[in-house]
Length: 150
Picture 1 (cartoon, rainbow, N blue to C red):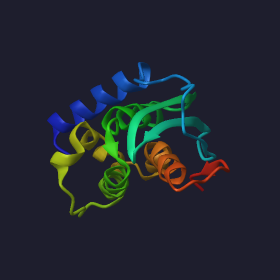
Picture 2 (picture 1 turned 60 degrees about the vertical axis):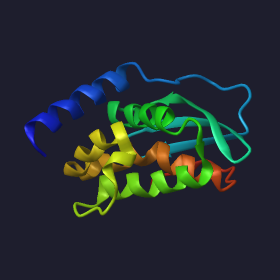
Picture 3 (picture 1 turned 90 degrees about the horizontal axis):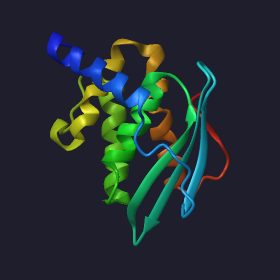
Picture 4 (picture 1 turned 90 degrees about the vertical axis):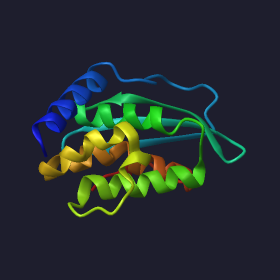
């Protein structure tokens, strides 16, 4: 990772980790699911409002490391007004981004999420970055039991 991207990564993680966007309980959620990362103790509850196959709103509550909170925050911004099928594609592309050095994805479609590519340099932190995403994926597939990154 070049120095400029590393600095952007650190700035975005700190900003979204300290001041997560869409960090609140959603009263009109159509999907609610808890996620837990037993490795480091990250916990979150993800709230989705899906209407006409479109994610109208995403919010979350919880606690965890800066990477976990920043990833959930960035995800909540990115997925607003996306079709469920498009959110599934973003889930798979994001997972490739943070786990595969040779990811064959369109980085432009991921927007700000690309700053989290740097997490793959720290394999123990990949589960922190993907917790909200796995929770999203499970929620969209109708899961009701809390999910874990283990």
